Length: 253
Image (cartoon, rainbow, N blue to C red):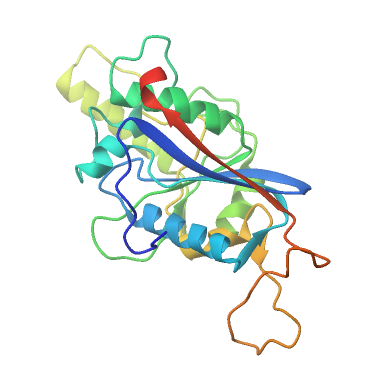
């Protein structure tokens, strides 16, 4: 698998890579290319996958699932959306009407099976990575939440020095203003938000620190700074890692 040039995905399925340690731990899912023209997350995920495959990283506890391209139709055409903006309405429906509805039918099942989402987006211009944090713990209407402390630890751990919070209320107010301009009879807040998960514009190279990922042990006698290799399959301490690959058809979603 080439980290520099990911293969073009099928537009009729979603591809996920799942790695599970044998010790218990958190379940992390990392997503890229929710918007098809935002490819930094996809490239970062492919680099981490190559390191796992090559033995530079091992999964020792918990589970991590990578979805390099969440919107294949948008990705292959190099545009933000397939038929609509997936990031504005990501929820399952019994009667899917478009490409993004079919994606949501698969992706929402995967999200529900995990504890933590790390969603990677891209800038339109060069800049330092930053994290968009969710709200403080609350029981409000816009985004009820009870994981602010855990999310703060995650935001501090992924690497960027800039963390943005308070953006959700500002975004919802902007949505309401735009609606008021286009349809004065409508009000309300936040229905365009991706509810229940938090978007992080993160540094892909730091993904390895989550869900128990760590560099593989250097063989005894190996020179420091040289390549790391996994121990022999029969040796003590061989990789405590199981793995699975899932490919779901969008036509059946």
